[in-house]
Length: 224
Image 1 (cartoon, rainbow, N blue to C red):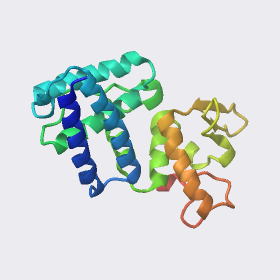
Image 2: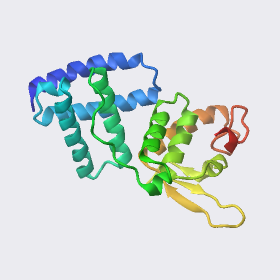
Image 3: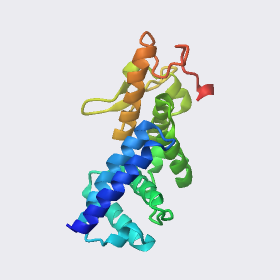
Image 4: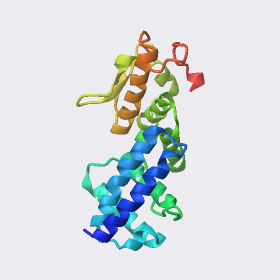
């Protein structure tokens, strides 16, 4: 481990955290950035990189690309997790005054994202990370990571969404006697949905639908 790089990483991370407090981002996004960045900087310190990794865009791109490859080869990180890690690293380096990294994000599976282009996926993921309302964040992540229709999202009931246990999933119940289907939920979707459910339990505990409106009425697809 390069102790000089580790010391610089700690100093930059401390300054970044203080700066992040005043940024117009959701608290959940700030927590994600801090967590992902902590992991990234630990990797940088162990990678053999030199101190110019914090000042030189080319050296930065090299270590970010290596980090992306490391996450992909570990087998533990989903494409969404890798993209979230890259977004955190990019946000940190922009704080340091460097231009956005040239390292490309991982393209999300068409099975998950439907007809969205790669650029549209990134915009939706960023919108989900940055929104202040837990309800909006839960809706966006659910739509992005499951590919269900807005109309299906609007009629989900509490027992249709399972965020804990060995098989987190959403159950989309068919109308007109059709077959229902179960769609797995990843870690990011579970976390966002559970945050909304925690808040929802204090406002609309007597309602069965997941996305109740401000008046406790059924969430309607037009308002999505």
